[in-house]
Image (cartoon, rainbow, N blue to C red):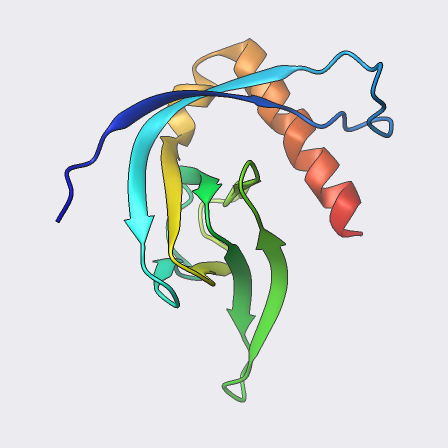
Length: 135
């Protein structure tokens, strides 16, 4: 098993209030976390888990999903390299996530971002932008 490594990451945040244009100034969300390899079809987190960690896809593809009462699974989103996922606002996750293919994700503690007001605003904007995109 490979040892976890820490990577500083910088990713452009999507504006929550207007479409992204080539000439628009982007906020930067600086993430510091631990890289984790996830094998194809393996769970990253489950519905109902704590929301203290969120993730950024470095390579591979991830899907979020929920299980219906009859056992079927409903896929809610796909995430590709550069996408951030698992940013839930409650204390429990509303969906689970699993790797579609072999993937590498960065795990980021929510408390590390929330301790920095500027970073918190950037994460909020990114989250709202993702919500708009999904609608």
